[in-house]
Length: 450
Ligand code: ZN
Image 1 (tube, rainbow, N blue to C red):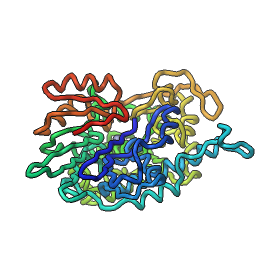
Image 2: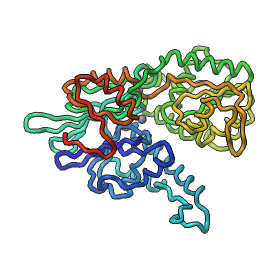
Image 3: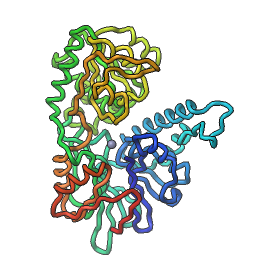
């Protein structure tokens, strides 16, 4: 589901996010279709956060004529650069795989990348002012935007847009993705005091998460038993946020002697290594306890036994280690990337463990393993699944139903709630709990007069 909302107000056209559809291949093709508006007519893009489903079509927007200003928090600006360049690189690779000499694109054989690395760099020139939390940014006389910490990933924000109408102020609040409270690295979401209208995400509107503490215990136990058996631990992980959260948990595990002292941790992902650097540079945006550790020179994302594998050769060298390695690599759903090599070398060994710490979409290799497949296909080979497989659910970056309702309840003065960014059952269940408010569930492309 890609997030993209257009707000027209006082003759200005403001886009809140410009996300990419993610999921099946059909959706991937939808990303190339024309926007429902004229990109050149957009004055501002306000970004809630750096996930691809919120910023992934920005290069396309700029390529198709957008010349306005992109406004985001300082960490979001840095993370977006990383995320878009990586996405463009993957699209170029994908296009090359489908392309070969003598076959023309219009014959349906080759596929042009949605955008290139050059397009990604070009759109970065559209970034203008940086938004600090809770400090209004002027968009026009009588029109301003304020970013509030959404607690979802580093730099994430909910954005309130306020307009003066005579002597009163009207406001609309876009939630962005709302974080889960009580996680170690990020501050909890900070709902603004008031807004007339709320447009809010409802990803987990129909479920409750397991507690974070129980998940960490389960995680340590899985690592310890694999290392004791003489195996490795393979953790498929998303490069942004989840990888840093796992590093934090591993750091604590080492400090508190909850992990085997001989275990060595490998972060085998150039993108996750770069993202970790961005977290370290913007530690003032983190949870106060994590920020304090940084100030005291104790980097909570860097356990003593951590090694970075940036170069391909460093990654390949890990294949020779048969026991005691904790390897984190992408992609999180095992659809590509270095993780597939580590699965190939460990999945068939009963002494190793694979620990899933994030969402896995239907049809992915990760999903097959989680669902108990006896073997999976990797590099044209059938690899038997003999390692232990753990799925630890408490690491979600999204608020659950209880937290969504608490966030919504913290906003005063609001009579209408628009639910977006989820499957219909989740929206309906959340709507049932929002009794007493007017609730709308807009369809893709639907317009409302506010
Ligand atoms: Zn997100």
